[in-house]
Length: 249
Length: 384
Ligand SMILES: Nc1ncnc2c1ncn2[C@@H]1O[C@H](COP(=O)(O)OP(=O)(O)O)[C@@H](O)[C@H]1O
Ligand SMILES: [Mg+2]
Image (cartoon, rainbow over all chains, first blue to last red; front, side, top):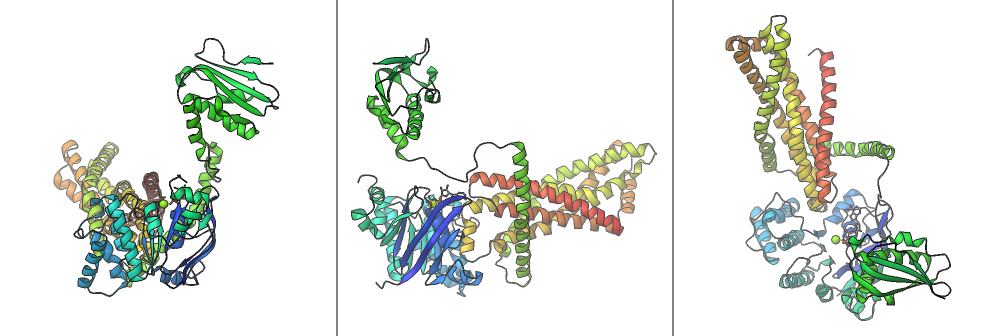
């Protein structure tokens, strides 16, 4: 795999009013990486993700996509960069007034000129990939939490994004489905060459799929480690080792 | 050397002694029942007993009887104070269970979070803050108005990301489904107007002018006003709650990240639906009000149906309808605007959705009242 920097997080500081959620985050995410954002509850993982995908302006610092400065770009440049992202939100964030098929189809209608028949095929395929074949006509309220998340993932990959950002994919999923989702993430990386940023607590999946990572600490309110999570488990910072072994080391 | 210093008084179920042990060391001796319902001492009271020179605190609990969480709660407060004063605490003299609970309580350090609203504020500060918030909110309100205007521009040039089906659904929701409540309220308002008029007009023996009063009152002012207020409570709140929930579920974020304008997709159909349906509802409200006037007149005040009908026809002019309908449209736009504004501005919690709905109704009624006064003045000077 070529080591080509794809996303660069530069001196990022995120705040809510006077409350500093995280400060001075610096990371480089290479093309084809599966980058794991780790950390305890409320340490600012979702907030970091929102800065990455252009939803929340950082108090300081910026994010570079393939060398292009996102936060200092014009709205047009930002829109163009955003087009390359696929995002799965923590709760799925499915549009409640649309069926699953319509949810996945909407980005395709917006950004491709494909005929409706082709779109239907792609929609069914994406839903099948996440294990929701046959649920096309369901509305989000008719699904369980885990199913909503998977449908959210199907929508996130509708346009074969270059960068896939996933917030807590496996929380609330049963172990087998969680495992299937890990396999799917690996598969998306290998087949589409996507760079994947994933926020997760699931130790098995961190160690299974993560190729690089950052650990956000909620006491010092900054990152305390980066690198491959398997190496962090062996020889990393004590706090990170404790996190990765559920406090047993 | 030992100096016992009892702190507990009289017939308490618990007792607590403080023993000086050499220089700078103090031992707390616990005895009896330390349960929450036993009127336990406050650790704060003990602070004054610990003189400045104390460097070390130990415990003795051989005589301790039953205890519950009241005991470790007392110790935790004490321990926090000791840490602050640099007093070393030796927990070995405590029962094992208490030590474990204390360890767990201190395992995650207390978050020192700045910028949090804490405690209650005085009325003066609250009023000041509310005033500042209001003026701080103005740019956001204007910004939202601008966004809606741009979105309408895109609609008329056919570039809005807008689904016709959504417009139909919203129109059904805000129009036909509001008929029942509009009927009830406007019927009663018509009835009130009729009684009000009857009482005054009887003095000059001109009771048949009830018809004029009800017709002009309902068509020109009350129909639009009452419908506006009903719609503010019904539809404005619903808009805010719907959009607020979508904000909480990150659905709005999902639109933004995909480059789809939530204004085009969600706000535009709602505003259009209300602007189209409000004049119809206003017309209907006027009709219902006149019907109520008719019923009151023929049953109570002995006015004939035909007489009432011709009197109504004479009173009503096209300009009254135009005034009523234009007011209805404006009120509809105000309600839709405030509902969508508060929904889009909603925070990310369930609580915030409730606040958004309340705030939408308040803003909606405020804007209705302001525009009603302005329009009345303008129409007066235009002579219509
Ligand atoms: N809208 C908000 N306003 C103020 N504080 C917030 C808001 N959202 C989150 N926070 C705070 O920011 C911190 C990080 O939140 P978040 O990024 O959601 O954490 P997590 O790592 O669990 O995803 C938390 O301490 C939370 O209290
Ligand atoms: Mg989160």
